[in-house]
Image 1 (spheres, rainbow, N blue to C red):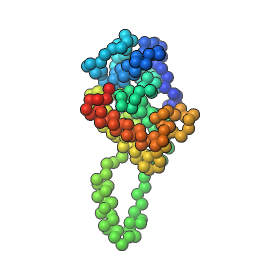
Image 2: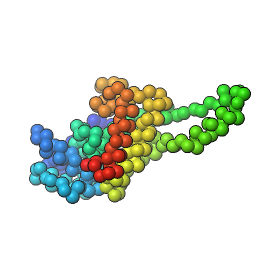
Image 3: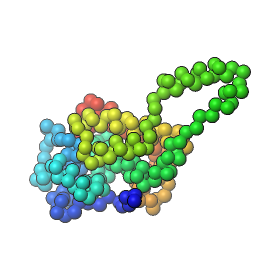
Image 4: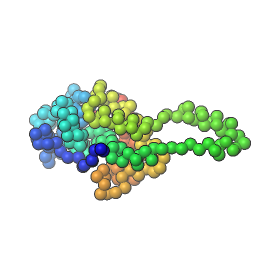
Length: 229
């Protein structure tokens, strides 16, 4: 049975009573960053605590919360983070993962691509056209399947990746390429209903798939040089 999606909820009180963040924007931002850093394997060496409650966020605690309640339990902490930050990046990966989980048939239809060679076969220069096609296919980068993308995102969002942020680089690039392929194969619409449970400024903007792909690609570049935190 497919998992029913619900809008991200905060951790149960016993799991996160000290990381609610309150109305302090600076503390809320720090909580989002620390929870994201914990999930992917560590904290920056020069991290500065802004509140005592932040110190209570540990990798074991975040991973346990995700295992017990689902990543929904912590994702709300990341929802307002900029795209150029680690929590903002994880929020985008979370939205993509939930879309793949919830609407697999829709995604599969978008992903499906048919190459029709009938016109090429009837052309006078069919042989030359086939050579060009074969060369293009040989040079092309294969687009990962929805199943491959979802499996990779599940690894990230359940805290199973290693080597901290650098390990995100191939996953971010893979997800960006996947989103671009979906946009090219149909259109760049992601969520088209304001009442949809996945409706968010990331998913409801114009050319959402392409824009999110660009953000993830930029996040990969930042992660490569140690600037995604």
